[in-house]
Length: 260
Image 1 (cartoon, rainbow, N blue to C red):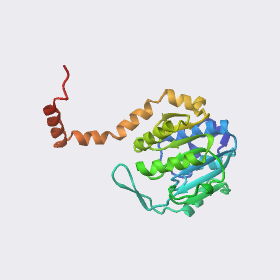
Image 2: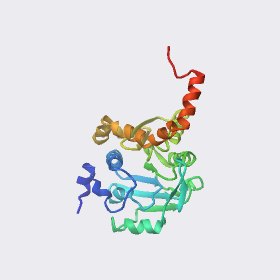
Image 3: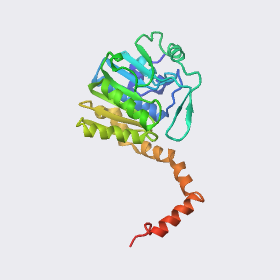
């Protein structure tokens, strides 16, 4: 049996072993590093995530004795649009199935509060605790992520963090979110953790000072290169005939592809 305190301090991926998580091993370590930092800054923290599916990313928080409450928000679609230009399918997507699977992680799942629906329609008053850590991993479209971000910001404690997954896909929404914070003079720090975990610290909540997060930040080429390679097929498509030929022809006519 895994000893939780030792496992979280070592960023042990076995904390995700019961339920398949749609994350890379680097992502999982980054999420555990954020959890470790949050529990050091705010023992008795509350966690909220948007887009739970089977509950893979809930597992380590369910096992964490310092996590007081977990909110899981999910529209529970059978398919949903994606910024990459296709719909993503979710088979057998139900809250009952998720809770049943999480029951295999820990016998007591009572600290999980589930809300089925769209954050654009959910009353903020249903979140009865101030949240220290939010994780956004729902519909991967710019409009939906922006809505999810505003929801998280509304229910976040004065000092807390909002994490985005799959940053290489929803980067436009992240840019919009940071622009909103800047325009409204909200103090924040933002950075990427390998592979695709984008962290926004709100107020005085310096997760980045945690030793484990600092280690990932120092070695952050993993996230940068992963994101570029993950989108490289778009560059390959754009340079393929006839698109590449037409692009080169237009550049030659305009004369913008030469230097003096």
